[in-house]
Image 1 (cartoon, rainbow, N blue to C red):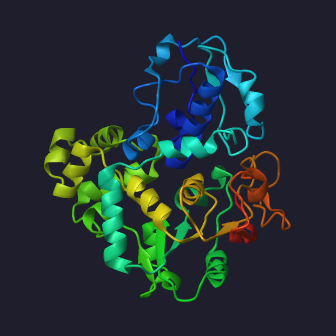
Image 2: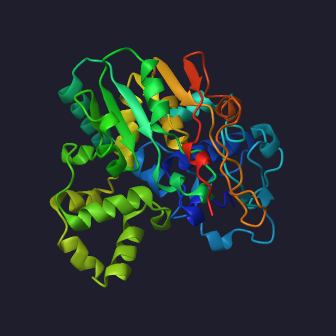
Length: 359
């Protein structure tokens, strides 16, 4: 049989960043234990659509995996602790983190598995060269969307953090903005100007697709965990909500939308590839951006010290206010130890929602 993991993205929609950590953990565990890495047909959809050199041992049917026993691991456990408990055909259950997922003896070699598909690499290289030539570029990742909901348990990073972070970077370099909330960036005067370029859609020459169906599909697949970051699932949701058959939706789509469907191309794949090609990085509290930096040859990284609020607020516990900060504690540094080098600079990122009571 094989070693499997009950992947959180199956239930919550955790995206490409999570799936990197999941793969790195599982591949390393199997390499060290001698077990086979089993993966279901619908597992790691985002990751498999992005890279061409991933290594899985066998495809498994989730129904064949032992259901009466699981091995649960915690966020702050170490990789060696998890390795000591793995058993063949007993699924792991937990959330891979830089603490429990990284085997430092294998990470350098395993990162080579993340080789982008040629069409993704070629499109990103062309865009970057046509737009910036040989000029160094700053990547700035703005993570909002579901983080605006207190139930996410995450710090929501305010514009002040990004303004302070830019002061840590070389003056005047162009800035590529990556975000899951494009409307917020487009309507924010602080990020409008010749220096800033919002990454829309590299497959469409970085232009917004002029097609309502395609726009809706791209928005849902990039932002909605309910669609598991998978076109087929998103199309079904779109059809159920609109009453329009899936085939009719596809027929009315733009050429770009049809091409993405046909060749399994996703905006998040292009975004991560382009982020990897940048020379400097301003991070958000996001595992997507964390891997974008880790796969790059960055000259400098500015990162937010405060990552998550902890557990979400319990309406019955009487505490109805979000934490503003963690009193200067470098939470990100403690969580992402392997990733942090002397090129990294941490900044406080107080949460402005702390001034507003949440009822």
